[in-house]
Length: 69
Image 1: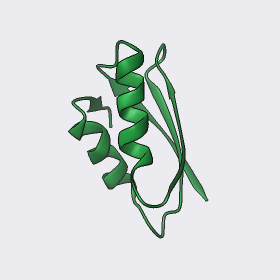
Image 2 (image 1 turned 60 degrees about the vertical axis):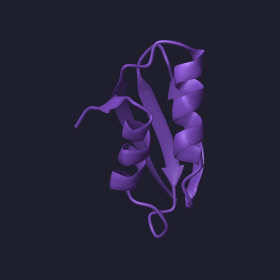
Image 3 (image 1 turned 45 degrees about the vertical axis):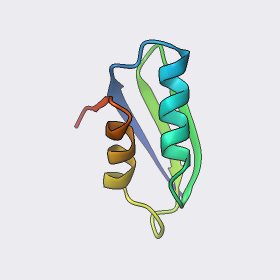
Image 4 (image 1 turned 90 degrees about the horizontal axis):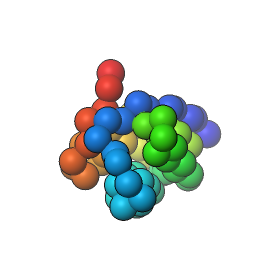
């Protein structure tokens, strides 16, 4: 199991948080997603054999948010 913490900009409310959580959690291989709205941090636990970081970032961007490098 791998883990990454991403810094995401543009999240302002509970709906934003839920959108990111469901978007990332829908990816095969993602085990857990935790969004800290106040800090903009998104913690993701995942199986690197099934999903990669680029796919996780893309899922967040598709929801309309910006992932910092």
